Image (cartoon, rainbow, N blue to C red):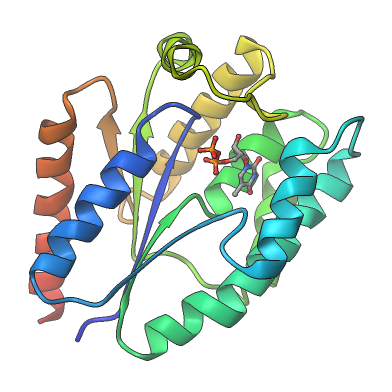
Length: 209
Ligand code: TYD
């Protein structure tokens, strides 16, 4: 069994959950044990934190928000992700520390470096083996979210220029760590994207075999 930590990143509406599910099904079909999770909200404590960060009415100060995501992360990585990796399982996760850097950093109050350091402290330094960035123009992403017709959370309700900054931040993160990131154009068809993701993961698994 090969322990592997894979994260999906990208703006809201970029198709992360769809691709995470397809990858999970494929890996399970090959006989792997996969833990599928997400942040915020991958644990019981995290579900409560998720409700605050996404649906609290009224302002949350930028530092408080960053600490809430970090608290969710500390609980999630410490009690769920690390134990799964220690058992040799594959963890596939929607969003991780890159989301904190991109979103909390995009508010222009907190610096990317300090947000990243906070996350790394919370997660005791754990970095993914692979991060798949589903890159999508923020206006197209917004169109997809509107079509979904579900309740907007606090961040989804932010203006387009905020989401434009988030997108730029993700792309910068990917440029800074090309070995960890696979960047895909999320406007491609679901199956094309799934194929590219499977090829990349197969490559990593072959190297580890
Ligand atoms: P997500 O679970 O992808 O929302 P949805 O249920 O709509 O798919 O993410 C929820 C929001 O949390 C998303 O707008 C991004 C934000 N977020 C941060 O701002 N910082 C973080 O560290 C994380 C993990 C998420």
